[in-house]
Image (tube, rainbow, N blue to C red):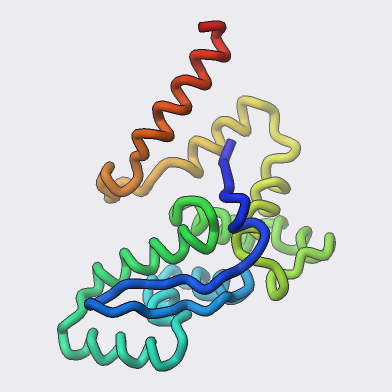
Length: 178
């Protein structure tokens, strides 16, 4: 089962992004703004795309001057997405695409979940709930495994959480009567 950060499910807040020796701010935004930024899959749509206008202009200048690298932008955008969604960025991106390409997004609208009024974490948690609610344990496990699989090019130090792995192992051991 995917675990969502409780605070990220309840509200939006501004997110600080550190780049090029400076700190920049993505203002508190509803899910709709994040979903639009994720639609094309370009990290630049998040950073500098979602930054306050002055901050975005500064970063654009730094990119054009060569004082900021695109991999720094990508890392900052991934960190910001993880913070806003309350789940790892690759899971957030997959759920956002899933909602856009399947019946989940329209069903949420019918049920009154307005991406223009809810936070990204809450919206993605609702997507996950609707997507998994009718799955048996095996299919849900497969779905979760696919969601949690980090991209092949992502180094383990960027996704492996030793403490979470130890907690999972202990929970599984307790479930086996250990």
